Length: 376
Ligand code: BGC
Image (cartoon, rainbow, N blue to C red; front, side):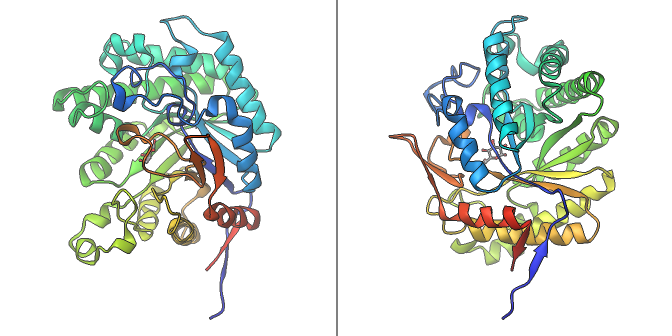
């Protein structure tokens, strides 16, 4: 059979995503002190090896990279900003720019400075003000270097696990507090949005949402959230892993080993198409800020990427304004309460030696990025 080439729009961003706590190592925050299981320790030592990691991203022909700044490093004590760490992230950003990798900077990817957590974290009535102050400082420092800002990563997943299920710090189980935190995060985002745009009028500011995983955390909350911040976002970030469609009876019936990841998550590429079509109504550019799978043997990753991109392409053809795709993740990393076992990286980390070993799928992704196209 003849293969078909599907081209993506011009100037499409191709990248990978990481978050500080999951890769950097040596961070003291509310997670690292929550017990052995939550301590990422040295992680991938990305804090010291970012140059090497970005070179690998460059070798994959990426033109963008999403990462997060660790608030606990920048403001380790209330109101005291650490200039050394500010300079560290400046170097990180400059390293990306030198390699023509457009930085997409996340300000909050689930971890908090200890002082902030001790004050009640997001439940503190002044939380939005504290977050705004952090965002303001970051925008001031990096305004000439960073155009794309993601204020919050997956507020829905965070509140769900941390305040409803109580399995992540601060381990609370309360419907009332979940709602409170959600409101606070909304407020925090709005304030951060405004202050970043004030300092840097050309900046593009958004949130990364997770659509999928389960009914409760996907549909209603997301749409409520999106509606409440309608006028406070320049783009929509979509993190897509599994579709809520996969919970349908049909999906359960056809569930087979072939279609699940190492974490047992169902692989459902067409779901991304439906989500993208749904998001069209917000009339904002969309970036796929995460998409990936745990696949230690790398048997499914290349196919996973191509199949998802096929559906992304279809959504684009039907009018979804998708401007970029970030694979989760560049390197294997610390998977929250699941530790280092799940392997999400295009590049494998040997945790004994910290050696980086590109998986075969990295070559496939490199081809896609080079051609700005997939071949199916
Ligand atoms: C999170 C990542 C996480 C990934 C895989 C996403 O929802 O943003 O931090 O590693 O899921 O579970």
